[in-house]
Image 1 (cartoon, helix red, strand yellow):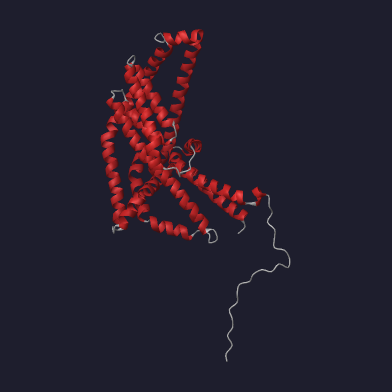
Image 2: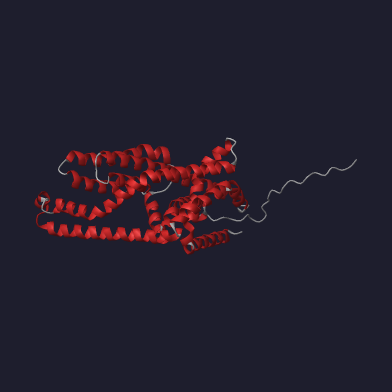
Length: 375
């Protein structure tokens, strides 16, 4: 098959997959979440199977333990998180007004002396910025919720996802072997190599970054709570969870915690510095300890490319798109690097034309078996 026919075929398959995901986005979320859970737990199940445990039993054990941990975390964390989140949303406008008054209002004499007559325009700009930011956040949450209707109900996500994950996890090896048997014979080795690179990139980011988010979320939540910061638990937990978006998690937590600390502790500069120092220290341990150890440098996901993928897929498919953004971005990165490497080796880049063999040139034929004559 000519290369242009192969490109046409795979582009057609990609278009069909994208169209199917867009049309069925309202029902795909539990199944995609189940596939992601199975992919996440497959190394544990494979390890148990290597110890002599039956695959079925190992799958049940992995799913059951995961559900048990999730239920315990929900029972312990969800009540505190929910109450603080509701109180934080309720008091957020008051915090913004008080912070604005401290910076540019009657309490901000230092700012008035610094900017002079430009203070009213700055104050108006702050008002517009706050209102636009609040409108954007509400629109984003509404969009995610609308896209989140893909789960049909919370019941489907909590019940269907573990069932789907169990069946996929139990049949994982058979599914991989079956898909491998469908690969084109002439390109099988290349596709296998690309698949291994994709698996390395996705596993390195998803599994490693999940541990980074969990560790940082716990550190921020506990540290801010110990300082006595209002809503410190919810601010720290959310900041840690969204750390997988480069720089967004730490900056979001720093702005929220810093603003609350200024309103709550001012003029106690020591407590404000401690709150800010928590995020600086968290960013340090993330960049120099956690990410190099847990994620590694072989993922190959540029921060700009990752943020674009999250925004694009989140806009198109809602919450389902957020689940698909990271693995698809990693897979696309592998394919793009492979395409660039092939381009650099092709005549399109080198400028050399492939010349057919000249007439009269002898080619080596396959050796023929010698005939042994009977005596």
